[in-house]
Length: 111
Image (cartoon, rainbow, N blue to C red; front, side):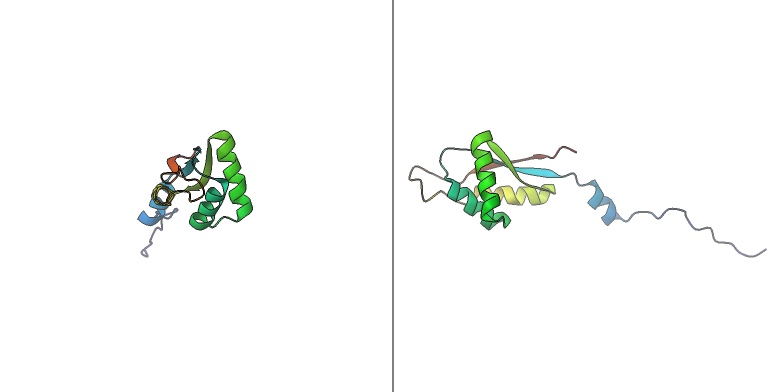
């Protein structure tokens, strides 16, 4: 009788594939305040996220009217980095009373 090798019917996933699949998405949410101008928000979104001015304006308008806007949905690690960059962006030079950066939170994206 010849030797027969039975091959598995499904391929086992590598650790890398399992890690990638398991990472749930997170939203980076910019929070509104009265100490930052539309120009500041548009400029920040352009520099940190590469958004064109039109998209930045739409997001600035949304954060102004609704109090918050999702600026990015990504992995938790990347969301934390973007949150830190928002917090480190600095004060708005157009508003003298402005003391610092805008605030952002990260939260699990609904899925």
